[in-house]
Image (tube, rainbow, N blue to C red; front, side, top):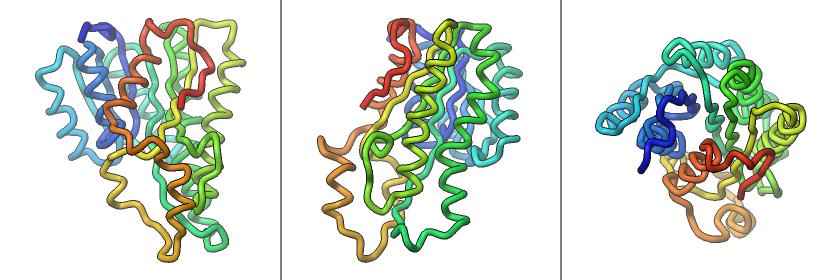
Amino acid sequence: MSEVFAGRSILVTGASSGLGAASVRRFAAGGGRVYAASRDQAKLAEVAASCAELPGEVRFGPLDVASPTDCRSAVAAALGAYGRLDVLVNNAGRHDFRVTTEVTGDEWDADIALNLSGAFYLCQAAIPHLLETSGNIVNVASVAGVMGEAYSAAYTAAKHGIVGLTKALAIEYLKTPLRVNCVCPGGMDTPQVSTISVPDDADWELIMRVAAKRGIMTPDSVAAVIAFLASDDASSIHGSIQM
């Protein structure tokens, strides 16, 4: 792979496993200087070690995207590590299936904070620096961001919010060099699949009608789309919602 991200600084959230880790490796393979952020520092260290032979550089630090303070601190840390910010990848998120009538207020608030509010606060902190570098944002939503998903009222609402956030920022910054795009993957073969909670009496036909219409995706295949959108090859793409 050519070093298309040489000299570029990229902040990837939710970077300790799955799509986030795959994205870190993809950017590092392209020569990028990656700041990988997540709650799990041990797994982040493993991700960074897996990139040791790649042409890019990987540093890492803590981030709980449910905390606005952490979101601002992660952006500051990426800037401190590399002196600039060219790409923000809002990947962190979590999906658990719940019967809507049984969702508690705390669960609703946590789902929205983790899957939507964190991305907003990261964008808010990063945009002034991305404007300086003519950089871009790639938001990770879900197929649940463009259609309904059973037992997923909070998650679906949050991911629709990510799509709306992408569209709003794309219009607000239309007359600037900043680009904002979004990917909406379906079911992926990630560690989260083995830990996701599902109601005992869930109707799997309803769940699978949305989750994996063309089969389970691999993190690497989705990371390739993220990297493309973040690259100069996608310089004319702005405000897109990629499924």
